Image 1 (cartoon, one colour):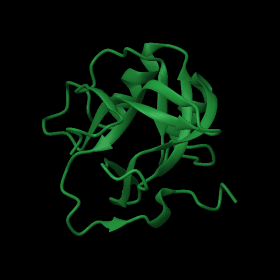
Image 2 (tube, helix red, strand yellow):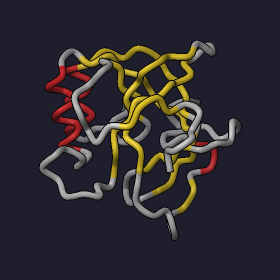
Image 3 (tube, rainbow, N blue to C red):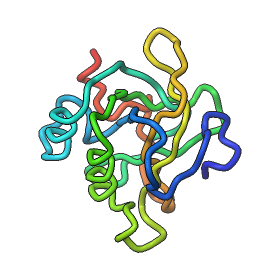
Length: 151
């Protein structure tokens, strides 16, 4: 799914971070009250809104991002600066892609480019991409899991 994606820099099966930036597009965004969203808000600094070149699918009560070759496909979310690598390790467990989870995991953490609000391209930003089949999953039109938040 990610091979050849123009914004993908490096794949990682939840390996050690080369960046302290993380792009979130679903239940970890501001406005969500789940425990990991609260944890992220306490252990990371919001940097900017941004977009990832991909399509967003409704997996369950949460979404999954799939990279796309099409420049008009956008997923909207937020970029955070993580205060330490323990935050990323906790998120890997939450996303069930840490080494203790069986492969293939539902999500994979990759390093990519994110276009920030205002058009600046941020290099080497972590994102969790969905890697199971999207067959039968509904496309989230417009690429925003929280459209009411942004209006």
